[in-house]
Each structure stands twice: as C-alpha cells, then as structure tokens.
Length: 427
Image (cartoon, rainbow, N blue to C red; front, side, top):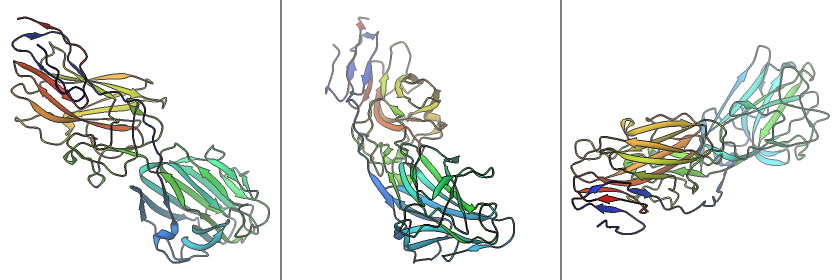
C-alpha cells in the first residue's frame, strides 16, 4: 500500500513490487503573501570620518545594512581656469549648514568664465542595488553665478521626472538647449534656506547608480566666481532576499551569495520575506523563513530517471525576465555541494503569471540521494553560470530535495511536501 510518512514535511511511496502509473507530486505548502517589513539604512556623510572641508577622495566606499556605496567623481574642462573652491578639492565634506542641512558632501568650484562645458561629475554606485532611495540637492541658486545641475538615475536623466518630489523657489527647470536639468534663478539663498533645494525620492526603482553633473550655465557673469551644490545624507531600504541553502552553494554575502533587492514585485510564487542583511544557510534550507512557495517538484511515471519542477512566476514588470533553476546532480555517486553551470537550466518569459517547466534527466538510479535545488528570477539576463551573485530585482528560493529511482522504490521529497495523487497497478 502507498505509505505517506511525516505529513507536511515529506512524502515517501513504497511500491512493493507493483508498477507506478500516475503522478507523484510534492508541493511546497502555500502560506499566502507575507508582508515585507521595510528596513531603512542611512549613509551619513559625517560617518566617513572626514574633517570639515577635507576632500572626499574618489573611490571612497561606505557600507550600511549590507549595501556598499562607492563614491566616484571627476571633472571635465575644455580649457581656462577651473579650480576647486570652498573645500580642499572639488568634492569635500562640509560640516556647516547648506540649504538648512548640516554635514553634507559638497561640490565646489571657481570657473573662469560662464562655460557649461566645465563641470564636476559625482556618481554614487550601490551594490547590491537599493530601493526607496531619498536625498536632496542643496543650494542650487543664482547670483553673479548660475548653478546648473543634471540628475541621472541608472544613467537616465531625471529632468521633470516623478522622482523629483519638490524644488525650491530659487530653482527652475532649465531653459537651455545644451542641458536637461535644473538651474538657479533670482538671488542667492542663505545657508539656512531650503529655497535652493531639490528633493528626490526614487521609491521602488532599484538604484545601481545616482549621478549629478554640476556646472555654470551661460546665464552667469563672464567670471561667475565660487559655486557650491551639496548632497544630504542618503536613506534607502535594505530589503534584500538571500538564499538559505548550506553555504557551499553560495549563500553568504562574503561568498557573493545569491541575492535580490526587493524592487518591483517580481517573484517566485506569492510570498517573500526579503529583509535579510545576509544569507542564513541551514541544512533544511529554511533559514530565512517560509517564503519558498514558487516551485512544485514531480516525477511522472514513464519518464525514466527524471525530476521535473513547475515554477510559478509573478511578473509585473511588463518585460522579459530570466528564470533559472539548478539541481545539484550527483556525479560519481555523490553530490558535490555546489551549483555548477552544468546543473542549471534557464528560460525567459514575458508573461505576467506563467508557470514554467524544468526537467533534469538521466539521474542516478542505484540509490537515494539528498541534494539541493535553487531557483532565481530577475529582469536582468541570467545564465546557468549565475547561481550566485546579485541582480537588480527578483527573488531566490532554495530547496532540499531527495530522490530515489531504484527498482522497488520511487521517492522524491522536498520540505513541506504534500501528497496530491497516485495510481498504482498490480504487475
């Protein structure tokens, strides 16, 4: 008789010499959508440990909440006098108030003429990408000078975008053919006034880079003098989904573990915790909670020594996404404890709610094997070489899997499996 052991955790079917005809299915128990709790991190410029008006070197890195921000800056000039002002270099830490905020990163220069081709370019890179990024540009104003700024998110110009929450009364959209951004208007604002500020909120956008280009517009005087624009501290969400298989499979951050920032609702199944700061490797692959609900394993009779997986994808992006699965297939009688490229299968889909089928064939038939599977989805292009590392969105799910294709037993197990249907015939 078929035997169902340990309900809610695993399924074992003993055939006792009878043939199997039908379908043996293990389904992860659906638990419904899990609310995701936001964890907010802040990168404060004063935490860099840089003295007032000291230079912030290009290449400086700062970490918080499992996210690393890399600061790079450069200057572009087509000749003439273009030198740093206010601080020790073109990017410096300023402890005093600008735009009503204290402790900022400031770009400052003296330009010998009103030449928009002379500029400071500041880029902030995030790894992994962050969502919920908020910050402000400070003191974009005008006088004998005329501040001009262009703002970019992931390389895309943000002029008049929804990410620009508000601009002060001393700031206006540009009216020049050579720039797509914002410029100061009217008279200079004081250091405590918010009238020259631009407030930014990138909400659910997965931010890999934020860039500002700062220059004099051609509305300035012939020798516009010192100009200054600053950035406030940055707040962002650290909602990152890691895997939880044993660490030999690439789970911890230090080993470039598989991870996905919560960005746009792209999921495997319906639930995701997504609030880890690091992977939590466990033997049961359940270290990050019960969010693995996107994959159903099966082994239909008549298909040889094969394992199938049906993967449910929730794709609200409107575009094509990659879905990849890895099963650590035993070689030489044992699993190797790693997801190799040869263990992987990748597919793409543009459908909103597809179920994709994966098949691993030619599995060993001489004994039972306990192994692990990993599935990932992202709008980035993934290949079978990408069992670890970071992508800009999506989810990772890890599963323990057991299978046995010996002549008198058919077994395929996964955590929280449930019996669906099986039909047997006498030999």
